[in-house]
Amino acid sequence: MDGSTTDPAAFWDGIYAARTGAANPRPNVRLTEAATGLPPGEALDLGCGNGGDALWLARQGWQVTAVDISAVAVERLAGLACSHDLGDRVRAVRHDLRGPFPQGAQGAFDLICASYLHTPFDLDRATVLRSAAHALRPGGRLLVVDHGSTAPWSWNRDSDVRYPSPREVAAGIDLDAATWTVERADAPRRIATGPGGRTAEITDHVLLIRRRPLTSPGQET
Image (cartoon, rainbow, N blue to C red; front, side, top):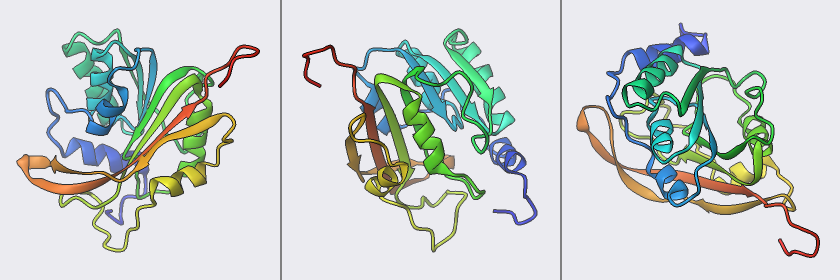
C-alpha cells in the first residue's frame, strides 16, 4: 500500500482507475459453483469490484444489490449493467462496510457473496460477515471466498501475510449452529488469469454458510 494514501475510498478508487475495465468481466468460479442451480432471488454482492459476480448473477435471473467503497468501481458496474441490458437487475451502490451494514438488508437476501473482501485498512470483517449472515432469509446462503495465497499481480505484496482458513473465518463469525450451518469449508486450487493474460496457480479459501430453513410444526429440519 502507498503509505501516503490514508483514505480507503481514495486508495480503492486509485486501484480501479489504474485498471482498464473489462467489457464483460468474468465471475468468480467459486460463485458459479455455489450458485448454479439455485433458484434466483435477491442477492447482495459485498465489495463488488470489477462487477463480474453481479453481472453473472443478474444473467441468471437474480436481483442484485452490489456495493463497493470505490465510486469508480460502482459507476463502472452501473454502466456495464446498462450496456448489457441488466440495468433493471443490478443496483450498484457506493457503501463503506466499515460503517453500518447496508440499510434494508435485514433478512432480505437469498444469497450474499463476499469475494476477496480483503483490504489494507482496518475492517472488522467478522462483524461484516456476521451481519451478512443475519441479513439472509431462511434457507439463504452466505458465500465467502478469500485468498489462500498471493497471486503475482496482487496489490498486497506483504510476504508475511497469513490467510486464515475457512474454518477459522467461520469460528470468527461465531454463528449459532442451531440457525446457521457450514455447508462448505475448503481450500481448492486453480489456475487464475491476471492482468495482461498472466496466469498462476492460486489457492482459494471457500466458506459457504446456510441459514436453516424455517420448519412447520412437526416437520424435521
